[in-house]
Length: 282
Image (tube, rainbow, N blue to C red):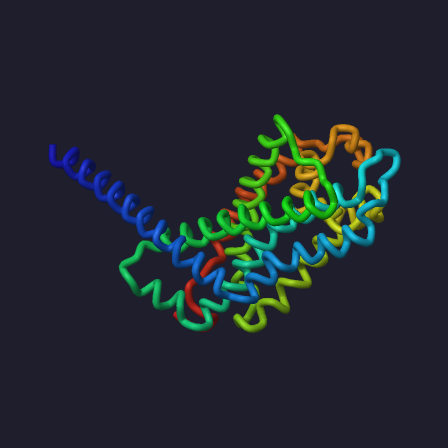
């Protein structure tokens, strides 16, 4: 009887603790969003930069047709930029912001409060999802107004949903894990930004993926952006555009499996590597 009572009390305590973490996490989302939109650097990297790149590349190459299809480069490019938007709002944002918070003592102060640690991560994840929705809306609006891109239809929106969820979740977890790499908060952009650019150039964002060198394709296939970009092409391009892929198919099932694997890998890495204090601090 005593054992059963003790088990019930423990279960209740866990339930109450989880409910409290979720409530505080919801409040943290609001705080994170305010901080995010007040930070000019975050606004430039996550909103202005993708739109500027879309306008520049679309204006220069947008009307070019990609043989053997009649798909314009603008339509091809918008898929890559939306995939990049996931990388900007999740991985890049967190891999830069968290080291800064670690340096200025924010993480140490939060660690010393009664707030459940889970609430901090709920706040980050919620901020990432809201920022991504806003960014996608802006990118689609720019593509529609300036380059007359076609919007997805039917089952393509379902593909867009799972690709976005898997991509955001995986890249968010990887951003949390990667936040331990920069030695200082000020040095974080210098570490993260070149990595993002390399992945974009090798993953079929700025150029047609099938025309990249074989070694570059093999390199990019090791990382989630290549598969995320490919899945987004399956969303924003018509079926005949699959002829532009190296395999003649968007391989959506394979994209889902690889992105799902990165979610699990990102979770493992973030649980293993994340730390609240700066190096050398206990």
